Image (cartoon, rainbow, N blue to C red; front, top):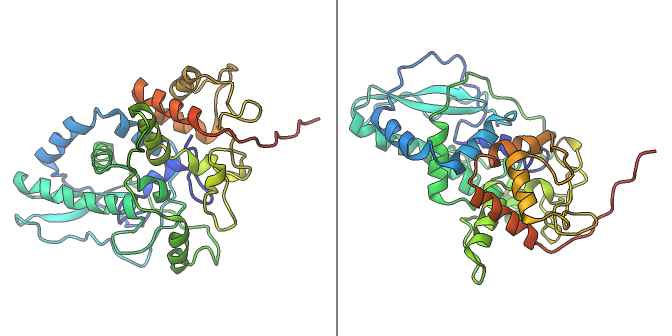
Length: 328
């Protein structure tokens, strides 16, 4: 669920690499820097590294290829500049399209402020779908779902990513052709299909259902792959979770509504919960492709969170879809 990126063309997990202003932007040869995230990083590490939700998202992000947005003619907006205590800010590492920024020679008391400053581009990318230099992201980065994440979960995710080992790698260029590569068209697309979050609890629903709704639709963004899209690339919400015949990498994404014939109506909550942990279906098969990467993330969730997702999915209205023709 959440499968492979999202937006038109790719799946959810890989889009997590697009955080911040440095989304996939080539930064050239970055010399190793003395990292001085210091006390603030260690405090945040102790507070967030054990967060299963942040670990799940981080694992999903690390397991798939990146889909950054390169801007080869621009320099990183976080160029070296004086810090509050006379220190300097400098690009410190690039992790599959994400430039993680570090602080050099900054006093420990000022590091926390700088770390929070670096977190803001990540927050803006997820919540608003806008880069730090003000450009609209293409919906291949599923900010339309991530916008529903809470401020705390965004902070936890950012903190978790800062604990990962650096990987020096150039950003990748878009392979989207005109007119879909014309960024100014995003103004109209957003007016039609984007509603900023965060996602709020639904009155009248219990805590487990609301938790599942939040996880499935905002964090794991299951609908980005399991919901069909219209000609403009927007999700057909009236057919939510009913499968996508033209999913990421042109692969068919299955119907996961409770329809007993074409969906997963015969699966129990326990069986769905177990699939999210082990990747094994009730028929003793194992999920593959992008869903296999998703399970690497959902396996890090708590049992209660996996069950909440299962409860939510089982509550959806069943939608019947044609079964694929059997091969001779």
